Image 1: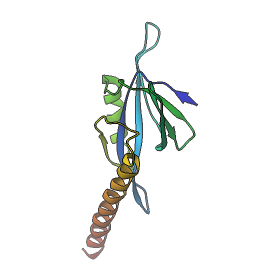
Image 2 (image 1 turned 90 degrees about the vertical axis):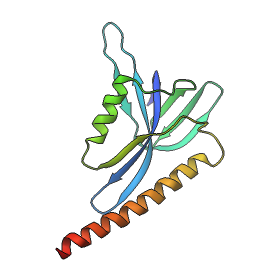
Image 3 (image 1 turned 180 degrees about the horizontal axis):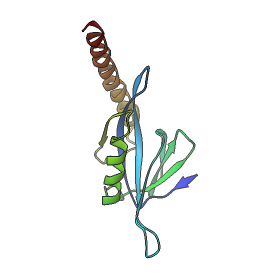
Image 4 (image 1 turned 135 degrees about the horizontal axis):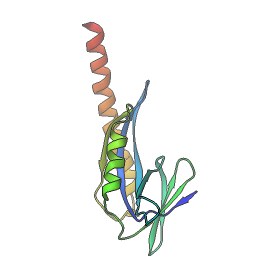
Length: 138
């Protein structure tokens, strides 16, 4: 399914499952409603790949969805802020932050962001493992 949000940002989302922790990059999109429909937000399943042309970025999600995001549309709307708040309330979400806008096709950027995310996750896993050990010994 293809989605074309009016506004969009990239989130760095850290998750903790039962046996592991990991970080994903996700698209948070917002749509402005009209007279008959309200504003809406949606978060993709995690960015797998990025393509672009002069007008828009195409973020391919883990679920197969494609977010068609206009260059120049990188901004947070009020409805998107409520979506981010809702995401942060999820029990498996450790942290979710909005990344600064940049050239998302910059060579090596996507890989570097994922690498940084993996490093962050490794550090969190170590802290989590240490906390679990301390609790068991108490």
